[in-house]
Amino acid sequence: MLKILVPTLMLFPTIWLSSPKWLWPTATAQSLLIAFISLTWLKWTSETGWSTSNMYLATDPLSTPLLVLTCWLLPLMILASQNHIYPEPIARQRLYITLLASLQTFLIMAFGATEIIMFYIMFEATLIPTLIIITRWGNQTERLNAGTYFLFYTLAGSLPLLVALLLLQQTTGTLSMFILQYSQPLTLNSWGHSIWWAGCLIAFLVKMPLYGVHLWLPKAHVEAPVAGSMVLAAVLLKLGGYGMMRMMVMLDPLSKELAYPFIILALWGILMTGSICLRQTDLKSLIAYSSVSHMGLVAGGILIQTSWGFTGAIILMIAHGLVSSALFCLANTAYERTHSRTMVLARGLQMIFPLTAVWWFVANLANLALPPLPNLMGEIMIITTLFNWSPWTIMLTGLGTLITAAYSLYLFLMTQRGPAPNHIKGLSPFHTREHLLMVLHLLPVILLVTKPELMWGWCH
Amino acid sequence: MADYKEAPLATRPKTLDPAEYFNLSHDYRRAEEDRAALRARLKRQYILQLNNPHRKELIEDPALTRWTYARTNNIYPNFRPTPKTSLLGALFGVVPLFVLYFVFKTDRDKREDKIKAGNFQRPYKLTS
Image (cartoon, rainbow over the protein chains, first blue to last red):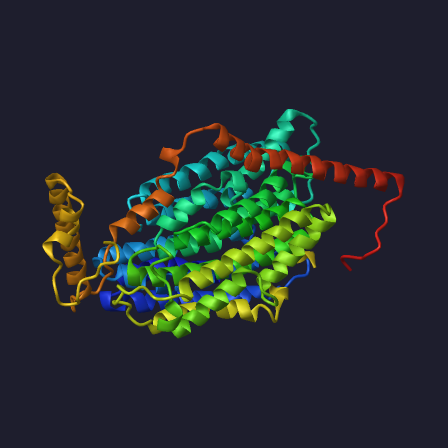
C-alpha cells in the first residue's frame, strides 16, 4: 500500500517544483507509473481476503478493483484537462493538478481504510477538492448552485452517519472492519435501531445516488470541468457503493425489512431517470442521468445482500466507471470544439470525425450493456438476483434495460448521424492525445471481458 | 393576386404592390418597412459572421440559447401546482412506490410462509 501512497504524495513536490515546460509530461508520467504499480494489487496473496501489512490500510477483493480504477483514472484526468487548462497562468495549472492529486490521495486512503472512521474522514475529505474544482473551474454561472447542492446534499446525508458510527463504537468498542464482521448483530427492537440503520446507509445512498436524493448529480456533473466530471462519475459515486457494501455486513438482520423502500426507490429510479434521459437537450446532462440509472441498479443489487448481488454490483461499478468517464471525455471533445453542450449543435460528427465515431459507438454500446462487455455481466447478475428476490422486479429491470438501450442509441444517433450544421466551420481535427485518452478508457473495458475474475470480489 | 409573379428581373408595378392593392394604412406600411429593415440588419450580421474567414468559433444563435435555457434552467420558476401537475406527480412519483411496496411485500411474505411450511421448491441451482 505504501508503494502506491508515497509516490502519490510525492506528486505534490513534482507538481510544484517542475519547470513549466515539463509540468504536464512529468505529472502524467508519474501518475501513469503509479497506475501501473497499482496493478500489482490485483494479485491476491491470501485466500481469506484481506491483504495487509499494517492495521490501518489494507486491500481486499472488494476494494482492489476500485483502487486500481482510481489510480488508473488520474493520468486520464490529467490528459483530458490539458487543453482547457493550458491558457491559464502556471500557478493555477499547478493548483489544478494538485487538486486532482489530493483527490487521488484521499480516495486511495478511503478505499484502503480498515477503520470505518478513517473511511468516513476520507469520504468527507474528497468533497473539498471536488467542490473547488467544480466552483472554480466550471464554465457556467450555475456552477455555484451546483457546488452548493453537491456539498450540502452529501453533508446532510453524512452527519447521521457520523452519529451512527460513534454509537457503533460505543456499543461494540471498535470500528475496525477486520473485527466488525465477526461481531454480534445488535438486536435492539426499537425505533432507535431503525433510525440507526437508516443513519448508517443514507450517506452512501445520497452519494450513489438513490433516485429520491439524486438532484445534486446532474448539476454537479454538468457544471464540472472534464476532469471533475470524470472523477465524479467514475470514482466518487462508487465510494457510496463501496461504503454500503462495507456497512451491510453489520446491519443484519434488520436489513430484511427496512431495505424495501430503498430497493423500490432504486428500481423505480432506473425507469424515471432513464425516461428523463430521452428528453434531454444537454449532452452532459444525459450522461449524468444515465449514471443515476446505472447506480440505481447497483443500489438495488447491494441492498438485496446476496452474493450475486454484490458481485454484479462490483462489476457494474467498475465497468460503469470506465464507460461513463469515456462518455464524458467524448462530450468534452465536442464541447471544446463548439463551446456548447447542446446536442443539436454537435450533429453529424460521423462524417467529419470518422475515428472518433468509432469511440462514440463503442462507448455507447458499452453503456447500453452489450454482451460480452462487463456492463452486461454486472447488469445480468443484478437482474437475475433481483428476479430471485422477487419475480415482479423483472418488469422494472426489463423495462429499464429497454430504456437504457433507447437513450444510448439516441445519444449515438443525435451526435453522429444526421446533417452537420452549416454554420460550424471551426472543428479542429482530433488530437492524438484525445484518441489516446479514449483508447485508455475503452481498452480496459474490452480486456476485462477476458478476465472478469479480477473484478468479482470475494463472493465467488 | 396570390399567384401573380413578376418577371425575374423586372419590378412589380405600383398598383400590384400589396400595400396599395389591399389599401393598407400608412402606419402598417411604416411598421412593415421597419420590420424589413430589422430583418435585413440581422441577416447582414449573420452573413458577415458566416463569411468571415478569420472566424473560428460558432455563430451564437440567441434563439437556441433561449430554448436551451428554458428547457434546462427555467423549469422550476415556471412550475405551479395545478390539478394536472399534482395528479401527474402523484401518479408517477408517489403511487408507484406504494404499489411496488405492496407487490413486493406480499410476494416475499408468501414465499416466507411457503418456506416456513416446507413447501418452497427450488428447481434450479443458482450458485455452486
